[in-house]
Image 1: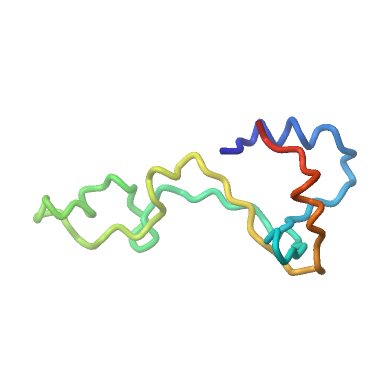
Image 2: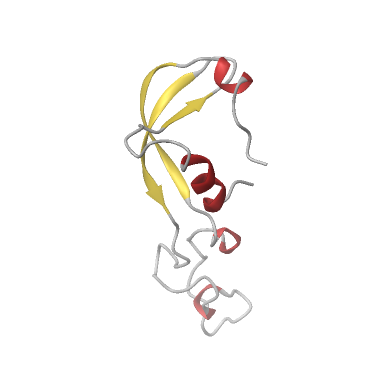
Length: 102
């Protein structure tokens, strides 16, 4: 598991104007831009209620409205980097020479 603290520590060694890309698939590498960042809110995407709302509890028939349609509550401390455009073929050396987290 890589944390935001881990990323800060490793990225702090590089100049602020360096571009960040994502290298995928060691057997057939591609380079991707990073489109953005997403932190899922713990609200239902259907009704906007919190994940633990009675509206989603099938055992409470009086309040049950619909199935919970939101992010997994276990993922409340997860931040996602979203893939952007494929830029070009990458290099397998990235996996051989990488600085591994921990």
